[in-house]
Amino acid sequence: MKPAATDLESFIRSAFASHASVCRRRIVGGPAVAIDHRATAVLAPVLNEIFSDIAATSESDVAPDVAIAWSYDPQGCCIIELNKGSGPVRSVRWRQSSRAYSSALEAYGQSMIRCETSDWGARVIVPARYIADRFSTSSSGPAHEDPIEGRTVLVVEDQLIIALDLEALLREEGAEAVQLCGTVEDALRSLETERPDVAVLDVNLGTTTSFPVARELQRIGVPFIFATGYGKEIEFPAEMRQVPLVAKPYCVKTIREALSSTVVAHV
Image (cartoon, rainbow, N blue to C red; front, side, top):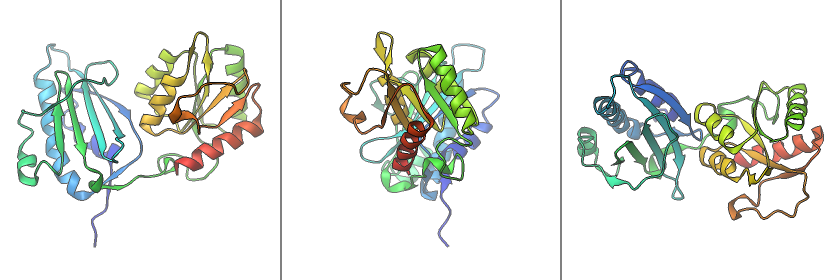
């Protein structure tokens, strides 16, 4: 019988459990993914060494925060990033690890798991061939196909009255929770600790746009739609031109149809 694949988030939470007294975990999250049993055999001791190293190199007597996030690269590899500190996971210049994350790597070879480091943490690359499956977003959320009922919805809208009206609409349609954010900064901070099931992003937020939030949602695999009160003559980045766009004021029918299409596209 073929060994069962393992849910990555559950695996990381379990791996961290023995280090809870010396590191304070902050799961940022990522797309739902299952990893092959061969990868878990290597990943477990590697993560154990990384957590131990982060705790040992902390410059404070206080247990350090460890932000953990994962995403896919264009080749389908799973990238797991561990960031020592309370800030978001950062993009840095990586170098091949020279540290002793080696017991498992030597046994299985660098082709199984590649580990890179920076001064603040580590990045582990699991090759695409060891990704057992990309779960649909509904595997970690509601078991049904309703795009609103039972789901957590992130709303990024800078007009408070409009945001409250949309929150009421979503709750009437059965949303389990609605997270309201009025700025890009608020939304990105929210995503550091909470992973919504779906999101509604007002394109124009004062003098800026919600595109940075959209990029983060794409990175962690959360389906979303755009909304605007300025018509459809908006210059979207190439990677966002297929995202559904609804016009304000919001109505149940258009929100539901747009969310349905983006949820289905992520399955």
